[in-house]
Length: 259
Image 1 (cartoon, rainbow, N blue to C red):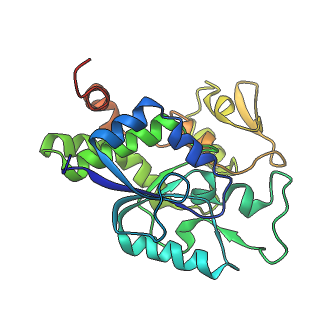
Image 2: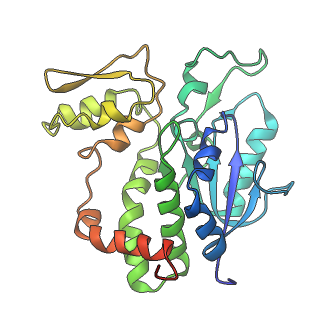
């Protein structure tokens, strides 16, 4: 299909778990590559040596400030990509690389790691460690509709992507440490005690006490999964109002033959 968008996966300092999430979309990935996107760059999945021009760059991992090549590559990615997506907790917030979580020491010469937004402008955040495969698929579909769709499809894609773009606009700051759940949800009287944040935590750093989440800062790896999963954290009337149409657009995209 000549009308495909070009998609790339750029790997910085990370564990490759986000790349595994891309592959874990199973038939969703095949449908994307067959009908909507050409994978033009990925150190793991494509035999391409240099970063090319692309419509969407999925960037995995934080950037090591002592690694000049990584700094050059992230800046080159920004120059060559129309849309830059921070894929996963390391790219979005620094995660275990920035905060020395996980019990794995860095090389002695590599001491400082920062999320990619510290060095370039980022358009979309997909938090989590590792990020949800379905969200990666949905963002790819919505990117296609935003860049190649009709006016109605572009409106739906904008509605879906706006909250994730809002996370990118907010940046890393003090987010992803449990503080954001406390200040933006609990302190605002919005927490309904559903436990979604605790269920989404990959390291079980959140427990529910007296109907409210309690974050163990020593266990927290700062991946942003809790905040992005909370149904009250970045509520969007556009998404809720168009939920059925957005879901229908994604379902139709994943079943182009109508099966």
